[in-house]
Length: 262
Image (cartoon, rainbow, N blue to C red; front, top):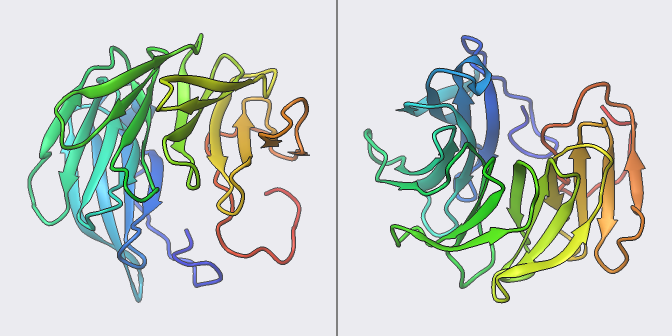
């Protein structure tokens, strides 16, 4: 895994526990959080790993165990030590890396596995959004012990939820119902429904440079780009994968040359 764009590759080799999500700290260069689950999340526990780079690769700074698999992780945008994970027991966990024990708080409202969690990046907001197998999206303020709002509309498992880095109160969700949906917190409802694939959509992400561009990855092994100003057809499609695309991230570093899909 690469610590910085164009930088040296650093690798963590472990005992084989599947790593479901990895997110770099927005504050500390090279610090990485990994959410893991035993037995591919079907049974067993989960561990949150906090990793720092060193000369030999990545070293473990701290780890936190949870009694169910951890599927996603997101860093706070206003505190360098705080992050949130989500798990197979339907809960979200708030952790502080400055403390050896935790979690600080547990939020339990979803009725099935929580597969996605994301912390808003826009200034003036300290909101978290979570997506679950119970077909709902929930909005949270980490300082409040219960959800602020529940969004319904998807007709299958929600695999991915992510805030717009440009538009306050706007987030996207991707689902097994084959749709990408754009939501408005202020309206407490869906703005746009895009039938993005003819297969389950497992991941989505916003472009860091355009408020109208998103990408989706699906079980059909394809990546598709969508312009919210005209969603009748994708603006691009990338083929080449031979397995389902479980997670996708749009490049945040300047791109000077495009190569074939890896």
